[in-house]
Length: 252
Image 1 (cartoon, rainbow, N blue to C red):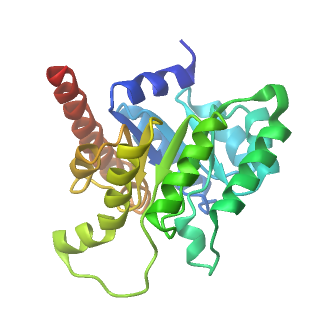
Image 2: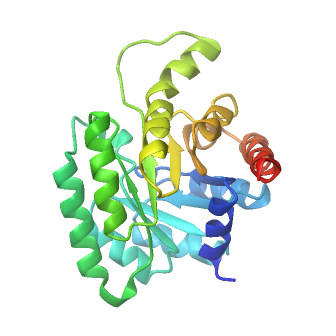
């Protein structure tokens, strides 16, 4: 079984957990902690930035599936050459903070360019559906990506400067959009869905209930100071995902 086959298996079992170091996280020591935490707790994959020296170093330290995220096709292709098991066009949320936005047409164009550049190196390909798009546009985009042979789509919420409520209410407000997007997309496409943005031990069960086959978890882990605390959160997420897989089997 190849590394990415393990992730595919977890997708099929609706229990995949991708731990996200961050598309703009270039702190190698932090990334190593995130990777160690994901690996030691049985996460399905880790997602890192597209900086070549970081990809090479992380590839040397782990055999777990590595996703590399970028919005630059040439960076994604280089990542595959350096040993990435999967590529992710997106994780746009962090880029919204810089005033950037992405239309459905731009996403399709970037996907086509990446596929053309990959040529015979075709690999597992995940694409983020911009959370700012109207849901009808998201569904149409997802269907087009499905016909293009994309393996996985990732939902997201939105970035806001507005203050949010404290505690659980604030967590749910942050995750509300990505959860609703997951529900709508799961009803309209056959591709597996990964729910990301504000997914943590509080909101993860709702993501699976909404129809996700996977969750993408970033700041609830990569913002922590110690490997121990990262591991505790990652372990909690893996346990939640495993319980969802058990429920799916029982229903079948």
